[in-house]
Length: 89
Image (cartoon, rainbow, N blue to C red; front, side):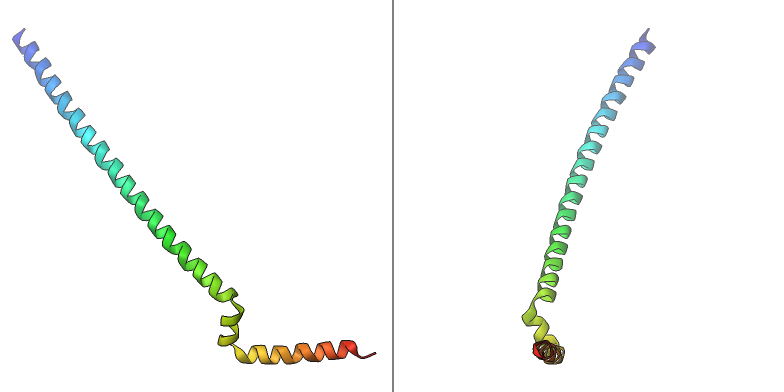
């Protein structure tokens, strides 16, 4: 009977240790997931800002004219010719 009590005590002790280890592991994993989620959110936010800045830069007529002035001069000239031809009877 003594061996049976020792086995139960040992089993209870091991079970408590396993529960504590499992609890620590769960806490660690939850913290790791939260940290990764925050890092992902920050990276997504940076990406969103970069994309928005790039779109604003590309859609800005002023920036486009400054980058490609000859395209705008030639395009304006051709547009003027097209308008002049439409007015002729």
